[in-house]
Image (cartoon, rainbow, N blue to C red):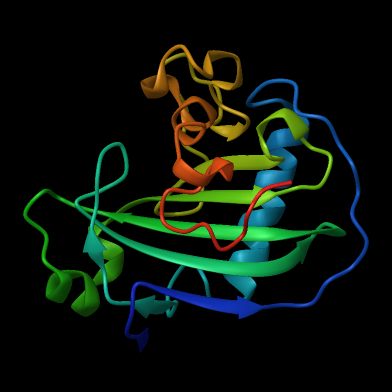
Length: 186
């Protein structure tokens, strides 16, 4: 296990030209395909899976986990340049940072990811969201819809608890990120 201290680690990874798409809903075939490519991209770079890089976990909040690790990258996925935010969500409620650092995979509940895809969803800062289980499979909602794309896009301003977009629209700074304003908004 590779360990780094600090709340978050920022790295830049290669860039290429963007491919514009438009967010419609969540869990569409194209969302699932992109989310699978995103997992593979993260896995080949040691950002998810076994032998992944780690940082000191910090106190989390719902709906994520008791402890979290968050990483920020600039990267290219499937020809699209963007900011990639990876949040590892650990539990149970009484998990400690030492527990996570000594055996992260057994405490990992999920991995939630945001990737800013230029042209994807301009009304909501172009963020594509995905929630993976510890093994890289996409989590699903109560209706069995894969959590990839723009979950709760239609609930902004109505119910922040409805899903990713509705919640992150409440973040200060207008950038849909709660942990930093370093990446601004368009």
